[in-house]
Image (cartoon, rainbow, N blue to C red):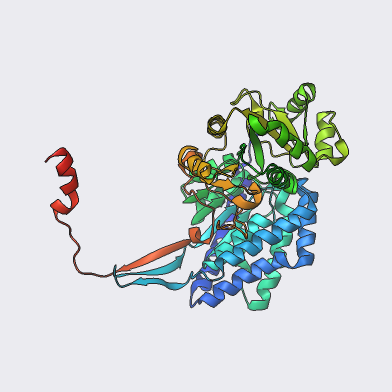
Length: 474
């Protein structure tokens, strides 16, 4: 049946009303504001989730309604990611004068961007919107969330808890709203066209729609994390970290390892360590069955995405050695590219194993995999030679090189590395994104610069071209 234009008009008006209310609330929030107001508002939104009882309830709802991930890991993710964001913003100045440099004559003043629209994924229907809200409020903005259809119920519950916290400190509920059920493309598109800035995490279709909406947009690229294990690595440590990362929340993270490239010299020894950690390498017939089950004409099999390993084994109909201690499955990579779907992102407890003759060969394979899918996101390496990480940083199309760490914990910020905490990783121009760093609160600020005169600093032509003239002549 053709779409009812009257229904589309009603949905458009509904979103217009949300945006109008958000604009009014944001103006009042910004008027007469102080840094303390912004800080307390961000804390209120964060505590709505971080209060242990609510965290447990929301994590359970997220798994129940989306069918993705597992409750224990979502509780940990909700807590850890939100606490990390709070650490990052704690001493950040986002109101008033934030910099005054007499040498340049420039004073910088932080200003809100206005109303933020945030499209959030079903894989992280609680942690991602909470982090978006915290970042928005910290910078004086209002925000409207656009949840996935599966995430609507838990998003409603989350906002209810946020609004209850707002009541304690006198905040307007309209500062944080969501597109109500039923979610539709018409509503989402109208939101994209009507807000001041978009933050889009999730499907690449949504990212592309955001970029073409006419609204400034921060989109993130597809993940397909590729990790190299070289001959100098601590094999037990690497196996343990890869397993912990790959299995966390049933591989819902875009930063979970999808491809593991192992140098031949240590391949057998490393496979032994992986087996001890819970990985199970499938033989050729079982690998073929798993591929047929997971990679289907319409995309990945939804009955295998982010499911427990027992469910993956059942749906694929595979036999594995020592199944009782299995945590994730390994299949051999037979090639790279569209004809070899195992070289792409799997969003499941399945990783692809490639063998490399040496580090240079491993680097070549990693570049080919990321050029096929996941360009710009990240690459990992387990090695005792730090210079090899620098080589990857200079030659691989990735914005992050994660060294000797559990990838999904490290890429989005960790308490033992310097990356900003985030659930949204920009992939630069390689991934078709406007940012190349982890999305954070600084992306939701406008900076006004007051510019004054300083003593003139005009160089002579000799100062600029002197060296060039000596080599090339005038």
